[in-house]
Image (cartoon, rainbow, N blue to C red; front, side):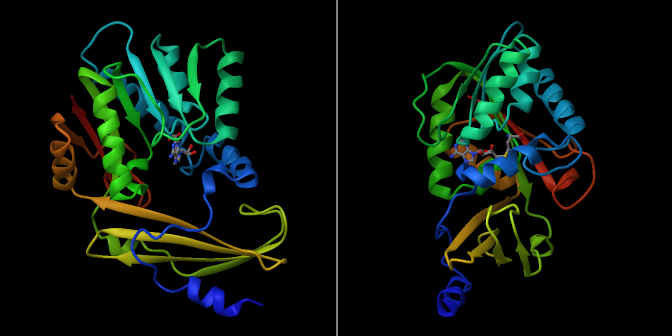
Length: 280
Ligand SMILES: C[S@@+](CC[C@H](N)C(=O)[O-])C[C@H]1O[C@@H](n2cnc3c(N)ncnc32)[C@H](O)[C@@H]1O
């Protein structure tokens, strides 16, 4: 048994050290995730259906340009927002790294006769046309799980693909009482559970990097063959000031914030989340 390997993997890693596996593209996990996305009553993977509808409508109401908009949804998942936008008559492109989610989204759009373009790509690598979109959205605090280098690269891309005067709307976690947002250490034994089809032991913990306003959520998954995989989620928390500085660096203008878009609830809802709207 590779106890020394498990012990070393459980030590506090260097900030932004990657895990050994990526959750969103794993064949087994992405099937579990799709079911989670599609559950209308929970705020995991995607938010509750009622919250999604409210958010999508709020986003569209904020748009000054009349008529059909050209919209880009980064990390669109199974297309829960893209379909609302398309139903209102807009041109929509959704990008997601999960093959499973994109296949579901394509089939769903076909069944509903919605004309949506879906790309199964990483938004960190996709090649998109410049000055093309009226609106870019990135929803469910996804900007905050990228490393600062990835985030910078993505912001450069978003600025480039937006039309002049186009809008970028996204949400991030607020830096209020971060220390209360860590989770206790936990372990779980499962057979055909969330992480693997075969039996496994999951060791989960979170580590606070107070100065950088980051919490690492880490899951070490050990199977009966003694394979060990580490899934790491580097989760950033921001103040409005942090977001303003970041956007100004990338030449975005007209920055405004809302902290009342989501219903009050747990630590990941209500005014624990900052929605930002900015323009090119
Ligand atoms: C928390 S989910 C949110 C999905 C969707 N925005 C929603 O709220 O319903 C994050 C999504 O980002 C996708 N994703 C993660 N990294 C990505 C990347 N590098 N490029 C494209 N999509 C990515 C995942 O597959 C997943 O569908």
